Image (cartoon, rainbow, N blue to C red):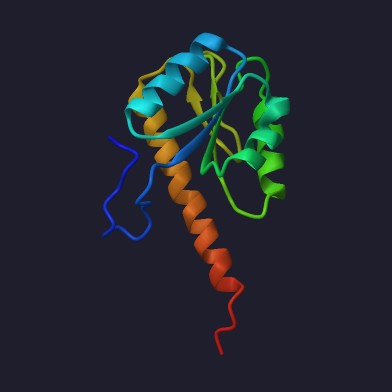
Length: 144
């Protein structure tokens, strides 16, 4: 599985998907950013969810991955922030395995599950974000 896609797939980027990774857990941040980079993703990191808005201003992240282990409010706050932005971005929230529960907006993934599960959720979030972006562009056009 890689973050680079063929040009023949219209909903797939021809550049690396950029991930904004937010986690207070430095081990998770280090391991996850390393593995994402090895799979071809461009990764920007921060240790604090309070820095997410600034990180998104400095980078053009496609998907935000937030560690909600300390509090699921982190995921809700990230979702609310992303809703205010002009360009849609995907969101994946990770948490401790016993604490992962269904959330309405973002995908929820166990923090230390198989890395492939996280990659699947990132790709799903990217596709959903891309579909929202495409549909909002079509709605804004004069189709007469």
